[in-house]
Length: 246
Image (tube, rainbow, N blue to C red; front, top):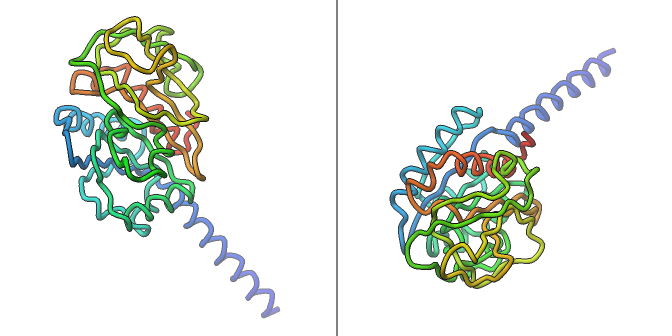
């Protein structure tokens, strides 16, 4: 009889442990990281932080904002469902922090890159594969462009018109990865200075190294990143990175 009671108590104990682990794995919390080493998109970062905080309030997830790269350690990162690189630039993480972030993604974490997140960590090949491309240059100024929605059924694009007219700074990429699930392309005939040809991706997602990655090159300044259509596009990307389906 005593053995049965002991076994029952042990079973309950492991159930509690399992429940707590599941809570940690689905924290409904994201990290927004906006450290810059080279160019800084000041208005986009300030406005983007406010936008994402509001999205968190409206969609039941907590938002932590920082520019301190020391938060990139294994113990701290495990509390987040996704990490957002909001207009980061340059070499923002040291070797130890890079390793912690790699381990986080490999453990099932999510990543969102916005605009100049592709102008970040050029000497870290793993990061390039994670985000899917590296920035080369952009035409002078912002232009009115025509964006084509390639996948209208995705959580981040289902609200968008099939052809989306938007004013933004459009990136040319020096390298674009293979196997990306492209969501949006830009029509290079609609503006001057495009260098990626007929199929010029602007937003995409993909599963990578055990985790999930979403990127959009849109969001150059406050006006762009507060555009309601782009806000909802970013929300869909965050939900995907968090592992949410709706």
